[in-house]
Image (cartoon, rainbow, N blue to C red; front, side):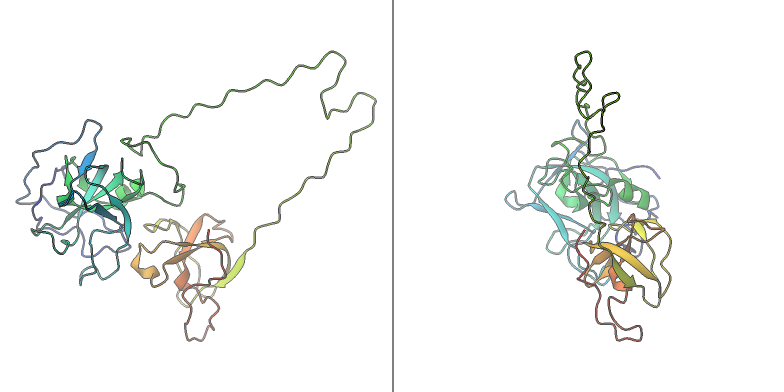
Length: 308
């Protein structure tokens, strides 16, 4: 399927029936769209596009999903990632058919998955309604591999790891290593500090403080078991499954309500036990969280577990 620059019109073929696991499982099933004309504008020289707010005083919302309010097709609540000022730049990654925002003229359902370039949070990713983007680039339909590549922040990146405005976040600036200072030269016959002179007495070393081991919390899996993932934003990087009734150690919890099935609390546990080794996450609401195995289920999250 060829790439396409999208103007503000409807596409008659749905990408997928639902958002599945947020944006992770929504692979592109587009056929060649009919009635989809080409936009007359072009992307900026650096490949970025511009936010075009209907009201220059009102920023455009960057969302976790391609709809503004819950609908019959998308019943989940969609959180706002950021507020993009009019004229700020984004890098378009792919497109998807979502839901037309209420109060906006027309009937287009196209949303673009983007990374901020010059917005308040450079590199952050999310969905922007297509009517609010000008100087559009040619992009493909969204797939799991595309969204997993460009999602930010993710399990492997720090939230304050920001690119300079106008820089594509996938091309980080080169890092120059600090200069190496050679050790000072010792006068002849003088031993370096801390080195035992030949035939002399050993110098007693100060004891080294060993930090205490991090605290772990035992959590019991529920009746159905749970999958684990390295990326809790879009449920990608699948690991070993936690068996029903299995007791595991968790180190902390993280709030990421992108995927509807982790509602209502929206928390994930980082699994410390082997073979997960603090590299995989599981939905907190699949555990008993202190409830009796026989029910009733009263706790979706164990809030004694600290935040990551």
